[in-house]
Length: 361
Image (tube, rainbow, N blue to C red; front, side, top):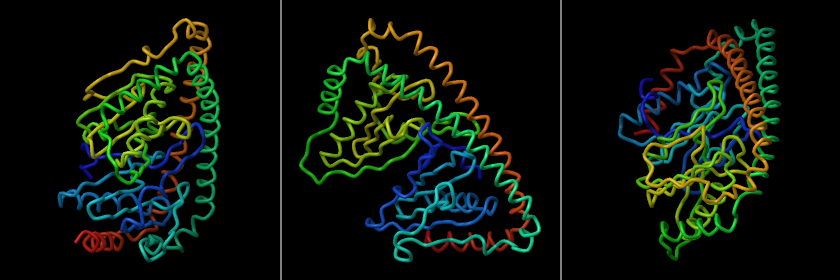
């Protein structure tokens, strides 16, 4: 699918984070707001991603806006697509981001791709499938160990960074920025949507800054390698916007999603407040703010050698984690081949075409 090489809205809905595997799949749609969600079930290599790519391409050909949600374990594959204009969400509902219907049939339906596989052929490869599955799990488990070690180091560094942060100055800046950029109004509190635009993947650290750039006319970037300053500002902006009735897209850190908010996008205002670091930089920035203005340099100097050593060790563990994810991907590719050989793709393709025609009409 050539369209995947173009600049469309791209997100991750899950992260191989320093805090373990974190999924936002169950929060990516609102049943109450009339969304119809289709949850795909099936083994590796059964065509889940290709199914979504086909429908996304058809929707794009119709001029619809499609959010592409990439897989953090294989960023060339999709974990989901969201078509807001049609209020349609299609998700890969298999592990590790298992999704089951909360309102079966009413607004969620299961697409079972196992109907297109030959069970007899799979049983003939039973031992090979079990072995490949277990090897894949072990590589992911080892990657998680390395990422957990990264997390302990990163949290320690943030704690140190907060120690040399001029907190009053950060809070005062956040308040003034919010009051300047976000008009006050008396409306029902806005809704928050959570996404990732970065991920730790077998290809390394991937980010999709263009997703924010093409949805914001004004981007205010805070240069902050640790996130100690920028996360305070983005959280304040988010809360201020929600209080004034603006819907927000909260983009969490793929490293420490439960601790750091990296970016805030307010679609109605075409405004984004973002964090820039060595993994994520933006081209179309309206204003850049350096974390230096919030830093007590005398205090920071006391911890310079410790932070530098910690960063070196953390990067080593992060490299090792990516290597494990690469090996996990290779074992997954082997596993996929067993299922590909057992699939009736002619029947699946016909089903996919009919399904796309029905939901996009």
